[in-house]
Image 1 (cartoon, helix red, strand yellow):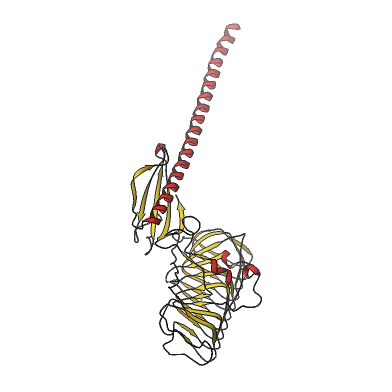
Image 2: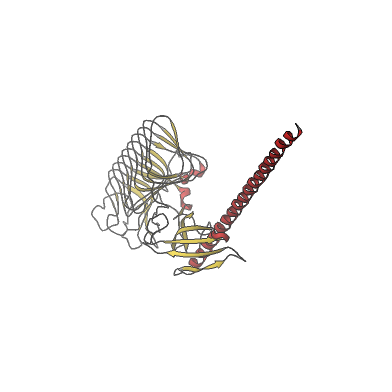
Amino acid sequence: MRPRRRAFILPLAVLLCFLMLLIAFVLQDQSRKQMRFAALQVRAGQAANAADAGLAVALQQLAGNAAYTGVSTPQLLAEGPETYTIQVLQPGAAMPDGQNVPSGFLFVLASGFSLGKANARSGALVKVGSSGSKGLPGVYGASVRLSGGSFVDSYNSTKGAYATGSKNGSVLTNSTSAGSVILEGASQVYGPIAIGPKGTLDPNSSGGTTMNSAYTVWRDWSTSYVSSSLQSTPKEMPAVALPSAVGKTSVSMGWGTNSLAPGNYDSVSIGNAGTLTLKAGTYVVNSFNIGGGASIQVAGDGPVKIYVAKSFSLNNGAAVSNSKVSPSLLQINMAENSTYDQQGGTQLTGVVYGPNATANLSNGSTVYGSLSGNNVKISGASWVHYDESLSEFSLGGETSGGGSSSGVSVLFRQRW
């Protein structure tokens, strides 16, 4: 019996030893993989830091030299081993998302590298030669027309919700042409109108008619405004550039409570008295349609930034935010040749900004905040309640240092 037991135990011992060796090998292999993965993560982080550093260097260079074109030779970050290179893409060149750099802007692309060929990229769309512009009027446009008992007045959101209007509801145009601003049909501007530096002022802001005259502001006998003045220099209103390409997803919502995360969409629509909450962040869309008694609220402290390529519309009693909320928490940025259309007793609290877009406000609609466009029409007893706190609002996005910069305005940043 004993020889048989030995014959059985010996192969079993060999098998156990083999299994233990196999387990040890597997564990060692897993440990090596984990260490390799951790090392790759570290290097990826180092590469991302190098890319960010390269972008910061590029912005500093452009602030002092608008002709800066970048550097193709890898530059050491501190003592290394991380390096970075910099490209400055001119208008018309393709950005990483496939869009072309808009006219009047540059795209700065910094690439960071670490050991093991880990790499990352950091980019920014910038406007050079300007420190950015500050402050919004109540209504801005190359052409502004108020008709049918429409009004512009003001309030200050830092002091609470709109109650009684004040007389700082400003209207501004950079145009100097006759009739660039037209008031008719008992429309009123409870505040000043400012026109282009070489425009022609009406010496009397109330009474009579100036229709078809040489004045930059035309009004009929039933309208009035507080005062008019010439700007010393044209107001800088930076163009809107989409931070990234629009998405391919279409979202349609109705009755009930809905939410939408920041992101890129083709179209977004809500109606049938539905409620939509927008989270703080950036939304890029082709079109955004709000109707059928829908209600939209802004979550948190914002801001919610919506970039619109084609159209943004409100109708049929829709309400977007409310006058208890600061208009700066909702920023609707309209791209060139896009259309903003608000009608049918709707209300919106926010900044509607599109100096190269068309903006229409009609049929008893209201904006609490500011309304800017190229061609602006306000009609049918509609109101713009200008938020006076927007006189401190920064135009053209963030700056290279988070405040005013010396010649470089950053519209947006991206990482890859």
